[in-house]
Length: 239
Length: 239
Image (tube, rainbow over all chains, first blue to last red; front, side):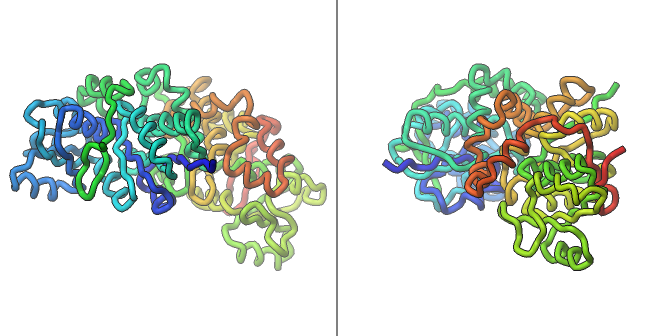
């Protein structure tokens, strides 16, 4: 049986090189957009609508939607919440459609629009993503959101975990050096994500904002057995 | 004493983020441009003139210079040699000025022009580079040449070796996730560069061209105790 490709794209800036060559795009923003989206579905949210700009977010707010908006790690003034996963565990969100705009994650999701399958991944649902991609059995790229177009360690480690799982236990292979690097970074980090990432730039950024509880939650892998997927303009639970 | 920065830039495409913030730029193209340049100086070459285009290379050739030109791993038609380090060990090059144009390496060198110090590094002279950077004691960035603007494993590992040495034994620190990643990739690779890189894309590319001897030479660290540096438009031996 011919092996399918699993590759890792470090930043949205590099996505043009991968675009249109893969049937499945796995979007990753561990700290914190995709972790928040996964948490929303664990809490029974009906759909998450990702939007790129604050203006779009405000337009939805004016229509009565619950809207999360984050820039540079903080809630944008005038919005209900930012991208802390804990905000999305609020019982009042159950059954609702929620709108979300973040610094990096929602932009990466928008870039993936048009691919046949767009899945939303984080460390907290990585194993569920591996199982889903293995079932789809198509060429797949993990698109890391990065930080403002720069390489980011936690997204790369999550992508490495997914790539390593697909290469070890399923019929996937890779051609790109970025994928080999992500795999080895995952193997270096996997026994202690929190320790490994303690000097990462984004963790330091969030720690300054007193978001250590968010970080601990986001770095605890495989808590959720669910796969959010983009259908049209909305993210819904894959069934 | 305030620590100086050592950072790693994965590809020329990302260099704008680092440009003008660092006093020392260490240019790396392990397979094979910077390994060839180091070998040239070990062989007593007087200067290496890096040029970006084949047209510039041809203009120098018409003036009577010895000119190396490589594209996609192969010698460009009509030139004396490509970027195999062994070509630069030819005794007839001793005391000469040699011109070189390559797919990735010379382009990265051109991008670094204007920085106060531009050093030429490869695995074969990495320790000499560490000692030189420690002596300069200024904020330093390692610029990996990559492969056609994409991330490349062997350059990153060399950058990680330099960064790790400067952080462990000298008064250097880093802020960027790319530097942490390069350090860990170096630590994963250091006991067996050849084995670690056996699946890397560029090694596969060169192997197809029967360049395994070149690869073995380039992946054998710290053979040469010398530091080539850019002075004006020419690379000369740092004294």
